[in-house]
Amino acid sequence: MQKFLVIQTAFIGDVVLATALIEKLHAHYPNAQVDFLLRKGNESLLAGHPFLHEVLIWNKREHKLRNLFTLIRKIRKKRYDTVINVQRFAATGLLTVFSGARQTIGFDKNPLSLLFTIKTPHIVGNSHEVDRNQTLIAALTDDQPAKPRLYPSMADYEKVSVYKTGPFITISPASVWFTKQYPKEKWAAFLQRLPAAYTVYLLGAPADRALCEEIKATHRHVVNLGGALTYLQSAALMKDANMNYVNDSAPMHFASAVNAPVTAVYCSTIPAFGFGPLSDERFIVEIAEPLDCRPCGLHGYRACPKGHFHCAWKIDDTQLLRTLPHGHPSHR
Image 1 (spheres, rainbow, N blue to C red):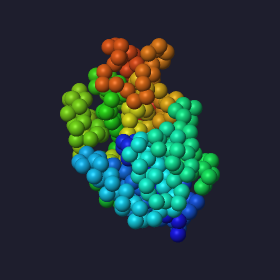
Image 2 (cartoon, rainbow, N blue to C red; image 1 turned 90 degrees about the vertical axis):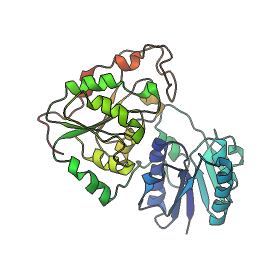
Image 3 (cartoon, rainbow, N blue to C red; image 1 turned 180 degrees about the horizontal axis):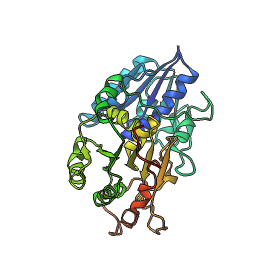
Image 4 (cartoon, rainbow, N blue to C red; image 1 turned 180 degrees about the vertical axis):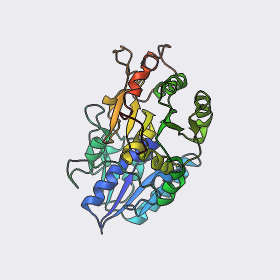
């Protein structure tokens, strides 16, 4: 039996996109053992995943290096045939190089890639991240990437069923980066023009609850679910929404991973970076006019470098309204 380990210890959205590798490996090696290594805090994303044998967790917040070397010893004992490192930083390079696997694969941007069995280029632009990740296992499978996928449980769907009694949309208003976050005032203006038939659910982590509460105060048909749902419960709710409005952030990838309709609002970043939505029903909203300062960076900033944040403020409400399903709102 083949034994694979996929390593992605970056952020939530990166883990979701890397699930496409799990899908592809399972399709080509249905009897193989596939394990996944991620950072502590993200493990609930893969709870109950039908194609995973084990989820390994690296606690990077406490005793980071000690936990790293403990993890290396654990990985060596498992005797993997192939380790696939999606991350591009030195620590995961160490995990890969010292894994004891017969074959180690990773991107050339990893500082230890010279010691990998196979290294492939990672070039931002002209392709989606799932395509870039697929190059890591193209020799093991083929050139066509699978779609990322999450697997909410029946309990997850039951938990959110109480919110699916009529037409609804979700809004995930927060982002780690300020310049990737559509302003709360703009969300409020959009809500004022939203047809009254829609209930609006605001989604986010516990830290986002206060932001959601500020937006909720502007409209009577809004329910603040910030911090109330797990990642998989949020995905289960998004799956049946009439539309999901997101920033260029993790909830966009949640929508992709359950093939939910999604409208992604891009402020300082651009879809050409290759992290856009993958759902069958997907829309991109961004400023109509070109700005010489956009994009200002791959990840965004804590504040607009120019001070004006035109890439967000000059998006028109009608651009978001146009992506709602046509006709009278109905329950999906």
